Amino acid sequence: MDKLLILDFGSQTTQLIARRIRDLGVYTEILPGDAPLPPGDPGLRGIVLSGSPESVYTPEGAVPDPAVYACGLPLLGICYGLQRMTHDQGGLVEPLPKREYGAVAVTVTGAAGEAASPQGERIRNFLAGFDPALPLRAFTGGAPLPASPPPHVFTAWMSHGDTLTRLAPGFREYGRSATGYPAVVIHEQEPWFGLQFHPEVTHCERGPEILAGFVFGVCRCKAEWSMEHYIEAVRSSLTERVGRNPVLLLISGGVDSTVAGALLLKTLDADQVHLMYMDTGLMRKDETRTVKAALERLGARHLHLIHCEAEFLGALRLLTDPEEKRKAIGDLFITIQERELGRLGLPDSYFLAQGTLYTDLIESGKGVGKKAHVIKSHHNVGSPLVEAKRRGGRIIEPLDRLYKDEVRRLGRLLALDEAVVRRHPFPGPGLAVRIIGEVTREKCDILREADAIFIEELKKRPAPGQQVDGPPVRSLYDDMWQAFAVLLPVRSVGVAGDVRKYGWVLALRAITSVDGMTADVYPFPPKDLLEISTLITNAVPEIGRVTYDISSKPPATIEWE
Ligand code: XMP
Image 1 (tube, rainbow, N blue to C red):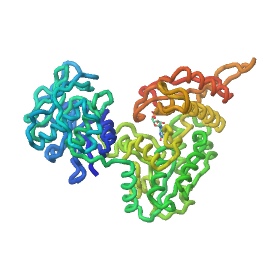
Image 2: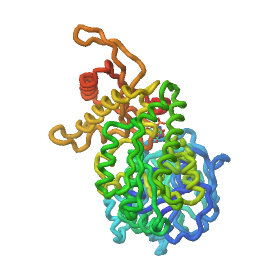
Image 3: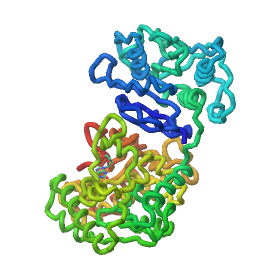
């Protein structure tokens, strides 16, 4: 399969470059900016050099493997990527008097008199990306691209503190920003292209077409990346690796592990697939029932449901410190996992499957991308079982090439229930980190009920700007990255009839985010918020007061504990 490599020099938008190109139907992989170029990959068609918060002249600015320039593949430098190419090839990069940030008009010289050479043709195809007359489908259809007459003016999106003050030998400027800096730079002979702006950012006009000009017009990629293709690739690799051995997957109830379960059931014999699910008593309302029904509908034959609410609540008794609570839960997961595995009596040769995503690999710094951001504390991380299976080469991670929204697309293709596929993320320790202070069964029930009303209402109500009559096209729930309720260890005074009463305080949290690393408060329509608050206090008498959390991340985190 054709693919592009993205060298990550640390820009926050590296992931976006990968996503945008995948959306064009071409597979992408990310490697650290200074990683050695993997030898002899027949599918590799081109390399993108990402942006960076660093400068080419600071020691932190990573330098690509010289093989990148020697391999003969097309290169696209974006922002730092272009500056890097310029610096490495003998040009000059210097700081701007003032950092340039945001929308900037760029004038592009169209292709006109380029030599009739392979690079002349590539230049014409690349510049077609800027032609306002060409729709995106003109690039993906495989038909020849017309040469675009000059000049085109479009709104680019910039974020740079340095600029090119002298092009490297062999390069020519094809576009300049209204602020007077080189914005599109191309080599006359080598297949090297550079953009000072960020085509991957949605605010950049013609961003997808500009990337498509490179991906299809220059690199000649075929659009072969689809979820159907992915299922077939997983099927052949699993058949080869796993053979007839059993595979065990621990299902958490979240989207990732449930889709991983559906994928195993689709690609292996259902008799090989063992799914283990622990009902810790810390799940959302109806979670166990929904997941069980979804997996049975897909043909699960060995679904091991373990009811261990009493054990978890027992372990959490009197604990109020968040870290102690998390540790107690993590330890108990491991103990129960080992005990129940013993009961299953699988042969030692079994494989352990995990719902790890591409972004999890990046977050935990396991060799993809440059930056190891936040390590997700997941109940599987560090488990002795996982470690032993990893040492024995018996871990399979069938979603580890996918982004979250691709996982959702895959779930739909595998006919998983929409309710499961659309679900917002849920932390491994469940409601325990949303009940501040000590966790009791009564508090779990109160929170479960209030949270269910909140979520149900979000799913019913249209997002701002959607039609009000009939089922909403896009609900408030779909508009948010994550929403949930938190039960605070605070009672506040209220009145019920003529009686003063003390009810618990509930906080509602709703955020928008791209990846959970940072989050913004959802601008909740006030009318919906007020109505939902009333519905909750009417239906859950133990709750006397509802508040809305208006903290972004940072400085707050998404969860409260
Ligand atoms: P924070 O609270 O760190 O959350 O801003 C970021 C995202 O991660 C989820 N989260 C967890 N997920 N195990 C998980 O699998 C955990 O222990 C855990 N803690 C937080 C959180 O719901 C949010 O989506």
